[in-house]
Every structure is written in C-alpha cells, then in structure tokens.
Length: 395
Image (cartoon, rainbow, N blue to C red; front, side, top):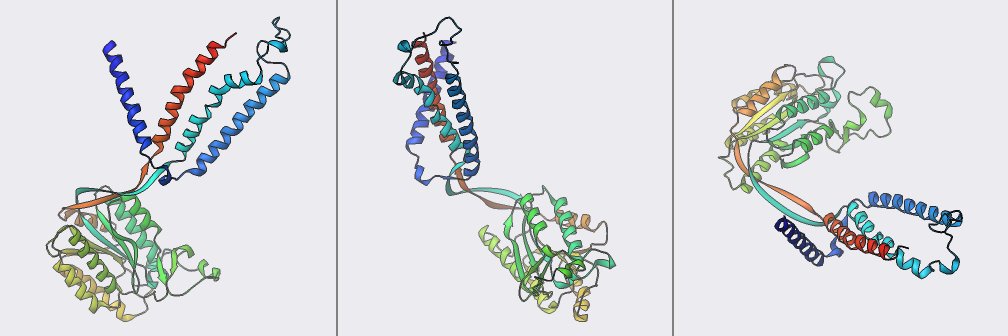
C-alpha cells in the first residue's frame, strides 16, 4: 500500500509539472473563444447568486444573527472583544480568493481554442461518385404525371431516398446542380453522410433567370415553394454538357491528387437525376466518350415524364441520351418504377472499391483544459489554507 501511495503521489507531481510547463508555454494572446455568450450568461447567474448570499449575510448581521453574539445565547460578546475589519478581512481572504478558480471555470465554459490548420491523412476503401441534379425550369414548373408534385420535388425525394440507402457505405461524393450551367453545392469529394445529406436536402429545386420577388400570388399556384427557387441570371434551360465537363475536371483533379492515372482508376461513377430532356445532346455525346475513357460509369435516375418541356427537340433527345448512357456501360432507372432506386443502389455497389487517401483538417485546438488545470491548482492551495485559517482562529 505504501508503494501504491508513493506511486500515485509521483504521478500527481508529474501531472502538475507538465501542467505548469504547458501554461508557461501558452501564448494567451493567440487564444480565441467560441462560447463567450454562454460563459457570460453563467457568469451573470453566479454573480447574482453571490450577491444574494452577501445580502443575506448583511441582513443577518443587521438583525443580530451573527454567530457567538446572539443576545439570547447567553454568550454575548461585547464590541471591545469583537474582531475588527482588518481581522475579518484577513480571515475572509481564502473565501474571497475562490473567485480565481471560479473565473477559470468561466473561461473554460467559454470554449477557448487556438486557431490552426492541422492535417490528418489516412487511407480508406471507397467508391467515388459525382452527382448531378437537373434544376431547369421544366423540372420546377412541370408537374409529375399530373400529380400535385413537381418533377423537381420528385427528383429531390428520389435523391434523398437513394442517399439513405447508401448511408454507411463510405462513398466519396460531390454534388452539382445544372440548368444552362453548372452550380456547385458540394464542390469536391467528401466522406460525410450526414453533412452531404443535409446539403442535398437544402439545395434549390429550380434555377431560373426570372426574379419573382414581389409576386407572392404566383407561388400559390406554382408547383414548387418560393424558398426552393433560386434566382440566377441566364438559367432556366436544360444543358448538360458544361456540367459533365466540370465533373470530368473534378475526377481528373482527384486522380492527380491521389497520384493515379485518370484513365486507369476504377470504382468511379456519375449519377444524373434528370428528365433527360436536354438541349445539347450532340455536345453531351463527346463528354460521355471522355467519361468512358476514364472508366467512369454513367447512371441516370430518370424522371420519366415529359410534362413541362417547351421544345420538341429536347423531347426527341430523351431516348438518345438514355441509349448513350447504356452504350457507355451505364444504366437508367425510371423513378416511377418502385424497384428502380434499389437497382441503382445495387449497380453502384457492384463497382470495385478503390483505396484513396483522404485528408481530415482540423482548424481548432481546444484549450479549456488549461483553465480547468488552473482552477484545480487554485483549489488545491485555497482549500487547505482556508481550513487552517479557520482552525487557528476558532474561538
């Protein structure tokens, strides 16, 4: 037992020494706080509690409630033998100094940190996928198969359901919207199911070049809610080629980062949620050829309804686009088919996994433990001194 006791004391000594060394090397000028409002609220509550305690003591003294001087106790102490202010103050020092550990705890509650950039590299087995969703005017303004839902809402629901099915699969995903031009939501690949799901959920349903501000009456009959429409000048049509070009550049940049050949990498796919009524099929064929060279499989979740299209040329492109996807080793899955999303999930799952390096960045180094250490050290000193003072001055 003696050995165990000595060992524990030695450990405590080492912890205290390391703590002091850490405090001495801390640059408090670089420290920032992320929860100052919370710490302020806690501080205000504690201040009023202390103030209430002091008022209670003063009222007690005014009413003659002080220890050893109650008139009915039989031991009334005369004013001559009472402790004077200086003696009272000296005896109260250990109690007053308790404000120091209390302040240290408040600083800890304020969540102190040092801003920095820290990179942690690791390798994972994953499948990599760029997802594109059609947010053209025909998607937002057209109702799906004469239902109350817009094609855009059906597309979003299918997309979210697909992500639910893929949850926990360690997929690396990027997400772009497209109308006449690409629009980034998740610009580069991430491996974070929760964050990615929220970004997909919050994404607009339609990009349009008409500013509908001040026309609230329109939204009572329009197929999508006002907050799901994003005004972007020059948008509203359905052109896929430019967005496919962006996806190819993302794949190539990622392959370069992973030190892999862009033409030999596997386990990659591009998923397009669209009604397939695009206006630039001839340009898009070239992009699909480039995807095929890179062994990137194209898949389409097909919003299979032509309602809302303005151009016969776009409608005639639907079967051609779907045939092109199939010819490149991909598949399309009609959203009206109840088993389609499950088949899409299975097709993605068949892709070979690849081993890639991911970098996890941390931008904050927590520092609350420094203030907790200061509070503990202060209490270690204050409590014994306070007890000793009380014992030596006990009547």
